[in-house]
Image (cartoon, rainbow, N blue to C red):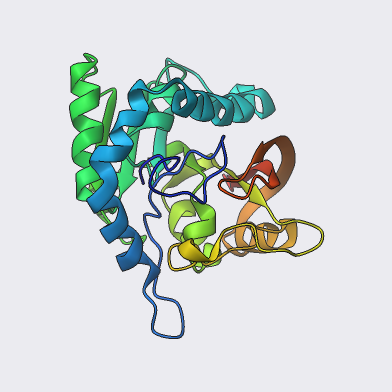
Amino acid sequence: MAELEHAHHCTPDDHNHGSPAHAHELGHGHDFAAANRAFFDQHAHEHSHGHDDAHSRERSVRQVNALRKAWPELFDEDSTVAMDYACGTGLVSQQLCQYVQSVVGVDISQASVDLYNTQASNQGLAPEEMRAVCAELKGEPGELDGLKFDIIVCCASYHHFPSIADTTRVLASFLKPGGSLLVADIKSSEDGRELFPATHHHLVPHKHGLSEDAVRAAFEGAGLARFDMRDVFKAKMRPTGDEVQWFVVRGVKAT
């Protein structure tokens, strides 16, 4: 998904979105995947400007650095094969590719994927190093040509997925044995207040953020072990100015 400081004003200063690559249809007849796909296809070119914006780059740097600080052993530029899930126009991938052998971005927005690949090419990166595909993964055999990953990274998109349990099960199926799912997102507040403004509730089913219990249940339900969730930094939510807590979390696929 694209970087959402601009048209998507529910984002905090350090909120670097990817598009919600596999938001399935929620109850009450609302299809979050369709709403998000339409939004990011429409605004991808606006969000691509974030590649030239120091503020947007800094958001992606903070997220990737938080993951690397928590689990440095997972990032090997000579061997690590990574997926950037809900990659948008590629700000997280641009940071991630410095620390891994290759990155494959996955997103449901074709416009975002096209910009991702154009920008990677313009920077002299070969597709073997960094590329994106437009796909709605379902965890079925043959998807992504059977490619499996050492790490799968998803930054600032889990709160867009109506069922984080379903999303986590799909992502776990793309991990190599012993591979890790790494997520960075916004933690629910202790008082249970809504963190996202009503103008974006059609895009954000988890408007209160995500609780540790909910994330743990999704990871363990997908068969991921060694659950490790850590608070990493705080940022202000736009346009309210409310401070929100960011977390990173890791789950490991059995060997």
